[in-house]
Amino acid sequence: MVGFKGVDAMPSTVACCAVAAMIIAASLLALSLGMLFATPFEQQPRAGAAFFVGLVFLGRGIAGFTPAWRRLTPEMPFANLDMRYYSPLCLLIGVGFVVLAVEGFAA
Image (cartoon, rainbow, N blue to C red; front, top):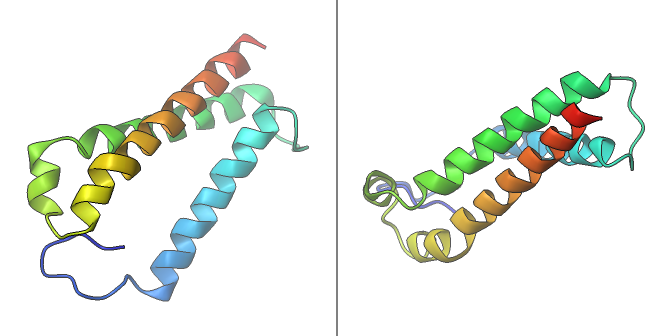
């Protein structure tokens, strides 16, 4: 779903696949920190990566509530869905990654 002013087409297939790949990578990172996915990488770098991913999600979640973001993405129904679902979900995911990172650093 696109909410940017003047955009009437979905992003390219390559862009969509790149975002999907990053989401899969973040999911595998979370699973590895939860000890549900085996990985050859050490705990500390994975915790650092999780902290970074958490900050990205928190930033996106916070941005969704700013007037600047509203001006940038005014198109409906994206604007309503963003305020109601997408931004709060990004905040929740961001907090989850930060918690995983803190636990990863403590281990």
